[in-house]
Length: 247
Image 1 (tube, rainbow, N blue to C red):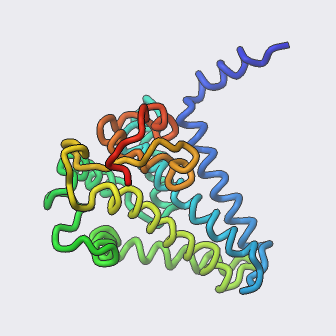
Image 2: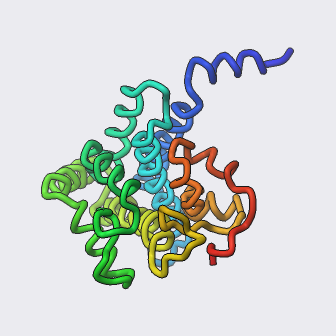
């Protein structure tokens, strides 16, 4: 008995983009719950460090999901994209999706120029640029939301302040650094060459496992700018050859 017709019916009723978005959010939540309650906090516990890195990667996945929503890539239905956009942005760091979407539109329209809210014209130093980037995006309301969430976490029996900081706050910061490196700093930093195209965006060499591990194929950044309506999980298909500007 073949299950293929049933699988086709499921993926027709539920867009694959929805299935993937739900999966990312559920895995993020399940892993967070597990490490908050069951992974010992100890400087000599190697599993602790591994789980922190995994959770950081899952935090990155939340923003990638919100990013897909910004481009209408989760579903053909606009309201579905908005729901996932608001949810994933909020879970990532208490961020306001509508503001993110507006700024991201400006990033695509004015990539790597003074009109690009993600770009820093005054310095190419990683930390200075990242600091300016965070200053532009972090709001008082967001900090209040994160503080409330933190205090709710430590009310859960078994969740200590150390666990909340190491397994929730730290991975969120690491995820932000991963996104900034792969989606802003590395692809758009100077020098801007002719090979980078009109969007002034670099791209990684063709290496799908590494591209997925490094940032959900976000390193194929020029390809994303060339066609932002391709969801992250299909972006690898646009990578035809390795590119000399990806070093």
